[in-house]
Length: 227
Image (cartoon, rainbow, N blue to C red; front, top):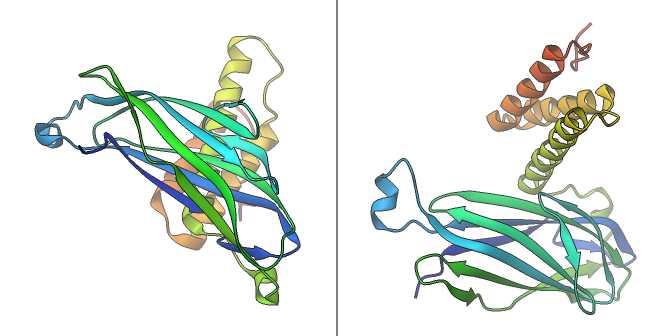
């Protein structure tokens, strides 16, 4: 039986120095499976709901950040991520940030992950097979200047932008101290810089939208390269 969601995990770096790493990001993607006539409809049905991802951490791994969702601590060294529902053809992302302690050179297990969801038509809980993720530790000095995966960097920046906008909206509604304008400007600048370097149009659109938001709120702009 075909799974209702298709999943993918991508590390920001697949190899790290044996001394450890202070910041490694795992991008988690899941897509609602297309089901027959749904591919021709503008309004697609929910294919999975009450989606949960359980994450177990090995002893040398510590979670330091979560973007796109909230995480609950579970039994032992585990996290529970409640991810709601997904429609047919829809794609969603979250990012998890980790610190990795030093280990001997070689490939070491880092995380164990398992998806669970309900299929709306039959109200039956479905579990996907347990997934093991490892990461390679190395003494190779070339890793000192190694860059991160652009796909992960891009979606991490977009998730961080969503979080900042949501925080600003909540602060305004509840009369709390607002997110400082310079933080929003720096985020817009970062998106624009990434778009300029990569040619990615989604990043450019998000940067422009954030600048327009600042302008609409009568906040001064400071785009990269402007005088």
